[in-house]
Length: 384
Image (spheres, one colour):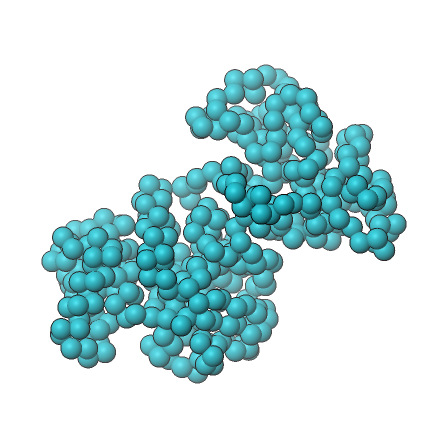
């Protein structure tokens, strides 16, 4: 078993509340990813689960047992840190075997478990070497092997790939996903990289300012963000936000005006809220990958100031009037047309997101069953 429940977890440093009343259930065998910007509380939350940080309030329950007062070694967890934390004077074998030796396990059991971990992680030929002779990816695998031999109920990963270069990060991301499927263990993974979150997670927890902004499957967060923060955080490049005014609310959706143009966005609004929305400021969201060249349902004419050619994609950035920032668009292939002084762009209102004055999203008319058959194209690999 590897079930985890967080009940109203709070962490306060001095007068600063880092984590605020977080409640969450992680299912047995689930790959859960905590994601968010620096300072959002994701690593602090993970350290409280591990027992490396005391809670200021709330309960941590693992497999039905409250573990707040238990030492880390007694919680049935194993943690892999951002730094490899390997002993440089020990061989790979001894590094992996170390927690078992601390527990006083028999030599035959140590040999069996270490050999099995080495086989899973493809380290068989490296067992007599020391960490200094290994690549970054191999060192991280040794750190993971040290966690595997403990046979924990829950694996905890604290940004384990952030010290690797882009190519190694991709390789290790694939290896960790395969490892999860092979072991079937519960894994909780902290990262600031949304690409890792989107590609690895069964569910993602988006944290902002110490609270949960949204929990859901990767495609659910991509297609149906519940607020402006999640909409802007999930997706790379980030979603475009345009200031609009609500003109009317009908069964067809919400009609808004942007730059003198009227658009009807197919979203749901409770009938009792419709009249109060007329004339209010709203935010229209459109993902860069949903923008195309030429005429269409909703049109914009922009003057690109920066164009990035990535081969598979061309990304353009054009300043918007006022303080609205840049409008970003992603086109397939190499699009020479975007070098023109002005470019005509368009998008479908069915691809738009709409947020009220408080930044809360109106529900989109999205067939998630159909969307799960598609992969978001707006998740370009980053090297950060």
